[in-house]
Image 1 (cartoon, rainbow, N blue to C red):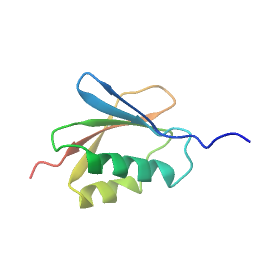
Image 2: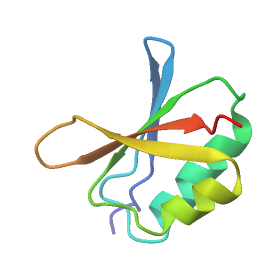
Image 3: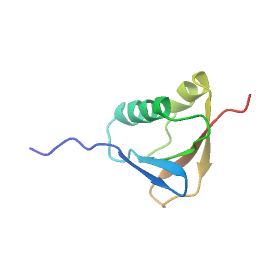
Length: 86
């Protein structure tokens, strides 16, 4: 029996990264939202995903975060998350 994949998290150049590739829904959404609840307002987060997380965008808006697609590996969707400017 193999273990269930888990989100990988690390810091690089003052930015937190979370890799949720390989996780079955809704695990990527849950892992990303859990991480955002633990961070300060200024810290950007880069998320590495298998596909466009359409269910994540309304959740981000509700908690005051926004997503911007950024260049990543050819087989991934990479988003930079920041607190919304309001």
